[in-house]
Length: 212
Image (cartoon, rainbow, N blue to C red):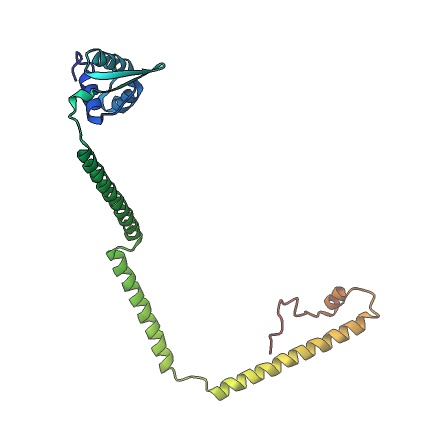
């Protein structure tokens, strides 16, 4: 763009390409970033183009609207308009279809990005195989052991346990009854009595009789 042109050529090409009405502010906003046009230069260029008859100008109150000279465009008959409408409809459907495909591909991409890579999968498989080998070795060791407990021995152990637990609870109850009987005539507290005679309770040792 030459200094002499002052952006008029760019603005004229833009209005002819878009073929829709714009204010000077609209054109400035749309072209400023790409072409570096100043607002004052845009206003002057559009006024000059209108004065030269290259574009058309309409005034609505204090607002000026500019648009391409329609005389330069060939007339469009009804058949052409229908064909354009049909083409627009087809293109809109294609855009919608492509947008949906893009969304689907984007979702698939996100899923792939969150999945393990081939190297990570190989590494994890190797770790799982090593873990399985360890479990197999432990299982074989257990199977080959010669000191398995028979069902009879296991039953005997559980019966003895139940017997000892019952005896534990019975003795605890007797000790509690004896302590309570002594405390009826004892001038101090239960805690002081137990400390004096050197008795440690289950609670002191933080143990409780298991269920039978």
